[in-house]
Amino acid sequence: MSIHARLTQVFRDTLDLSPETVVEGLRYREIPAWNSVGHMQLVAAIEAEFDVMLDTDEIIAMASFEDAERTLDRHLIAPA
Image (cartoon, rainbow, N blue to C red):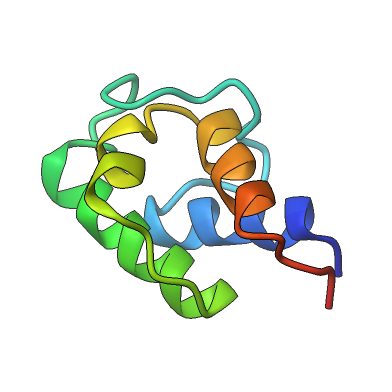
């Protein structure tokens, strides 16, 4: 499964999104589930899924799905 597909699933599972929800383009606080608590749950889920440790600046800067994807690219995550 690609990084994109895995990250999409993490967003769907963590934020309790329906399969029909378009995750690309989703931004922090755009939906009720992606509040400050949801953000930390999302960070924890991303770290667990991809076996990475995000630093504080990355966590704060992750304000969209695309930001999360770019962060993973910087960590050089290889597709499973």
